[in-house]
Image (cartoon, rainbow, N blue to C red):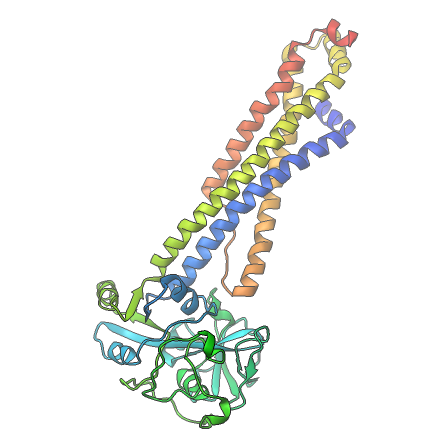
Length: 424
């Protein structure tokens, strides 16, 4: 019987191919949505896991996390530098690292921070060493620069008509190991160099950035005077990472608490009228809720497409059975029992749908890989695409539906008498 079915499918290869492609495309749409949404959840969660607590000025918690963890450019309000000074001597804090943004180089964000954060964010260096002076920089694993390369920081981006700073040129001293986060595409420099290059001296107060009358402001460090009015920064100046109340204003501080209990106490202490403290994972949970709503809409669209495909397949199979009435009648006339006719027609259609489902899973996986690759290339966040146990359940449900769907043409063939078929 198998040999007969395969020969029949080869003879009707064009119609069989249409059925397989219809099923494959409808399945691939649903599978790619599920895999991409899961990859986005896992990738963002893994990126946020490296940071325990983020403290910033009052404002949007979501934007604080997106800017400080995922390095998305945005104007952030600044908090007083004495917050960093207090955290630095807090016995509950292992380390507290300020982060400052606003500049870029060849599309890579330049992040001002400390040696402590730079040394711990990736667990080590693949080559080179940590920066030791204001004129040195450390690059992420995906930054296309060599050790010793020059970095001329640009305020803003080319798209936003940014301008290049001439006060200081950084030289690359080390490359971090891969982290699978946005920091793989970042250039890390001493926070003091960022302050000096933008004319932020100790004790200066800057309340907010990004307002209309501050077009030339640095997004993370606040408004600053024209570069010609700055004191020339010294690229060989040593780094003093002891903070005081005179420290310039900061958009965000990444904090490593000593214990989980300390993390919750710090979060409570710094959620007041002037600062906010958030767990990145907590903020992502709220984003996932929104993402989940979007996923439901996309899954509904994919399910609608699958229903339309199923209706099309029913129409195709009914027409197909009508065209094969004489063949079925001949088989019955030669003594083929009704059960054998039912089995042949059912198995032919089930094989086509099963092949379409398998091809759809393959196409959906490939589409998710391509989309994740584009996203990872632009954001630096590694999105792991892979199947989970519930995907196996989905495959079983689709195949069970295929088995029921295949029974329709089989029943039509089963109910035909040889005389009826040969007369048609």
